[in-house]
Image (cartoon, rainbow, N blue to C red):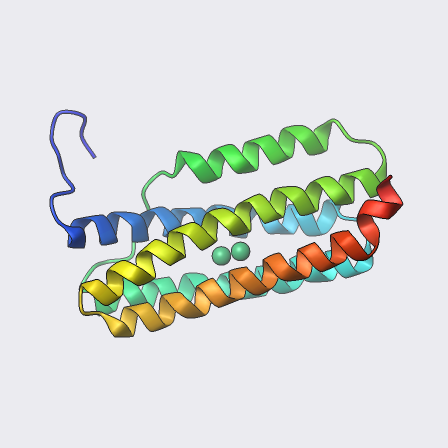
Length: 167
Ligand SMILES: [Fe+2]
Ligand SMILES: [Fe+2]
């Protein structure tokens, strides 16, 4: 997107731009999740990250489908927001020695990611419906449902044991 030209003119342009934003974000997350699996200590947390990694691969596949249904080649656009969330998580994790405190920090970072994804999918679903693309909305809804479930699972893990262990 140029600084001097306004490339997003219609709701359709905005939909495609935001689709590219979440596509880039999902791919960054795909690269980061193996590190979270590696760094986490609690076996259930490790497993939660591992299964969300598998889900994230499928989510990228659904986004590919949404692009194609909408007559666009799948492509990403830089998303400084997700880069910032991931950078901050890496900085904080680098400052922590205690494994239980690290688990709590990894959950918090992952939940920041999930909530970012949820806002993007929420907007995309609403716009897809408005643009007369229920087919795209349905695929995006599957991704949103998985993000919500991942977020819930992380909350349950944090509240059931990890936060107490770290305290
Ligand atoms: Fe995702
Ligand atoms: Fe996610």
